[in-house]
Length: 333
Image (tube, rainbow, N blue to C red; front, side, top):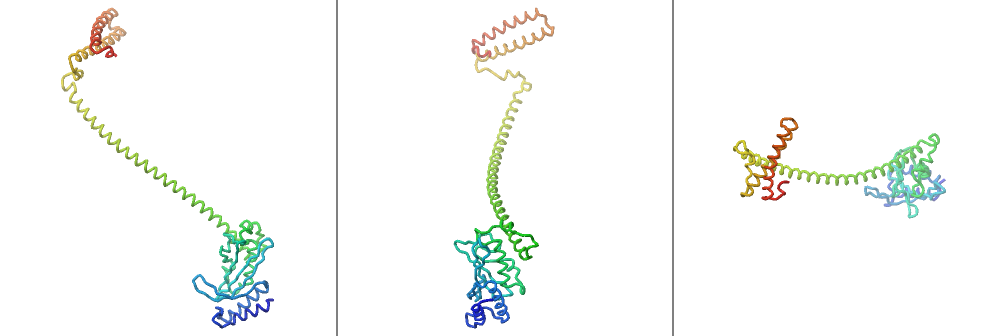
């Protein structure tokens, strides 16, 4: 049974008509609030009641009733200080639940039902219905949730949920749903961390690939420049080849009526003698070579071959002697 002081406080707070009166206007609503709070205090008599201003996210301010106290969910873990604010439209709207943390007891960052600021959004609150849901059922639900997944950082982890999950037939439908949502939440946290890691890795790879693209573009630009230079060089060589072909056409011995050797003239009389002597020497070499082939084929007799080679060798010696005197022995090489 709730303490008399708590009952008197509720009755006084709900019946107050001063400017500081609570934001509950309907008499039936006040009766439901009184009933739910007294039911909560029967199971949790250490909870205290108070009133105060509550600021909604939209900036509006209302005077609300709240109840606060400690939940002892485990002997090995610290108690959880809980504050429950009753919405101005309670029981049609769920209450606002907050957990208080301190320097020694910090809420771990990835808790599925409690954010780092302490705001609690359990499945019981998210699926709140009237009738059916009340403060007593809410606190009982939070005790079960926090006994499996304590909100303080050093006391719980996702592994504790999976290892402590009993057989589905031994838990209620709501408790099974709470645990399932908790497990899904931690799976999402792991997946999100892995995704962020993959995104970071892909971002680094993207930078590397962009650098490689820049290098490839520079190489392509250099190759294109080299191709243009080679193309220009080919055009220059083609022009030079055209000039040379035209020169050959002009100096073709068939068209001008003289031998190719006549196109080369000595600069002076001595050079002319050297050119003639060298030409005669090369001519004798060719004749001797042909005589060798004639002997091998039996066209010329050996005696005739010896006689001709001696005469040719005598003439070749005189030409070579002249070349040595005019230009030196290196000219014969």
